Image 1 (spheres, rainbow, N blue to C red):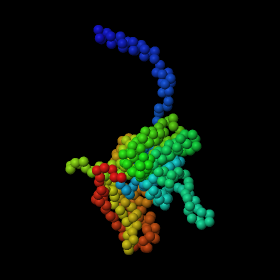
Image 2 (cartoon, rainbow, N blue to C red):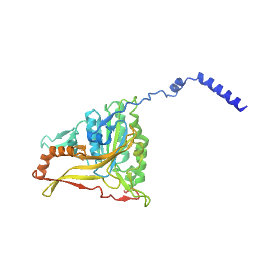
Image 3 (cartoon, rainbow, N blue to C red):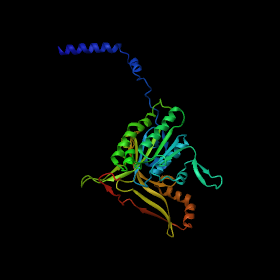
Image 4 (tube, helix red, strand yellow):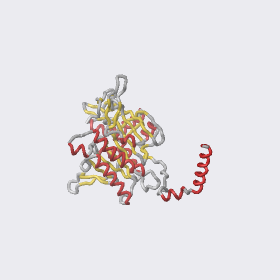
Length: 358
């Protein structure tokens, strides 16, 4: 009897489905939008980065994290991305909340900008060009960063800003949330909550939606993420590298590059030294692709970062770089008879914590 009933139900269901028009239903419910995504494009980084990682560079239309301890190559990667964007007509949008920005370094890396001079003194009083720049003079909180990004995307949608945008935030963990500011207490849980609300539930969705064919522009968000080292949870355990500002951005990111090691910077300085004067002209650094939801490639290697960008950890490339920059070092050191020294700092452990430091 049960089999007969099920057979009858199926027959009725099949008959109803034959008469049902799914296309009309989708139209009625507003579900017939274009669901195709654009072909994946990349903002190429240096040949050295590509050689070490087997990755072209920064995937457009995605959330990208560059994380690691201080002075380990994150800003070098960020500036390489900005230079690459300019060459391809994509507008770099710098959001500088850590306030370590250096225009001279940006120039060395190849960023194009105009120096605006005082007509009387000839001194540089400002900078202009094909980029947008904002810092802590206007941005005070996590909410400010989110509002700024959303405002530019809205202007773009209205036709007032006809560019693909590359948002470059330096850095997550360097600015608190509104509640922390108002209470005069930098509360890590509040900050993480604000990152989740403002970015996880809002900004990040607007960025990734630009990957769809229906979007006239493609926007990308590259963030430097400050980190801290968490103590091992047991005697046999290992310390962990943790992101400042919580893990909302980690979960939403599709591409993560980690520079350095977990418990130390993973770098070694290369210097030119003469008579007590020295020029640090390069650093060897470990890097790895920790997360890659674009093409699945994850790699680990070593690279050399310089004030002009990345070069391969190769004797020939390092020799050529020294040759190209010898004259500028001679001016600083007062002559060409200098010594090249490499200082290994890989084993200088960074303090680890049970909870995220304030």
